[in-house]
Length: 127
Image (tube, rainbow, N blue to C red; front, side, top):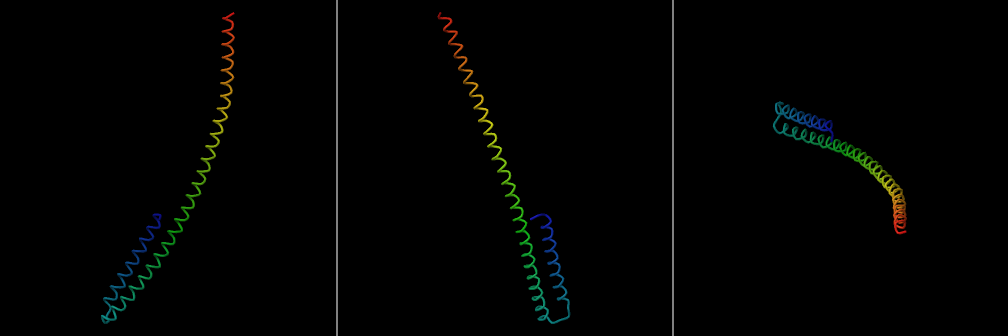
């Protein structure tokens, strides 16, 4: 998750913890019976737990969406890079083959001419 998402989750956790502490302290200092106070604390704790679970679900969903988005972008870039690499490799291979064929023919012709010249020189020396 991004830094911004981490900060938001931290702020949310801090707010929930602060709210829970405030509710509990407020109830403890309220002039009610202990049984009633404990019941209210339990109810508020359950409400806060439910809120935390809901927020966790929302943050998790956002994280999943971001991951899928980034993952899709990475796959697209990889596909583009892979295609470009394959195309470049094919072009290079074709260029090398063309160059090889061109210079091979020249080398064969030159070697044939040299052999012919040597043969003529040798024939001239024998006569």
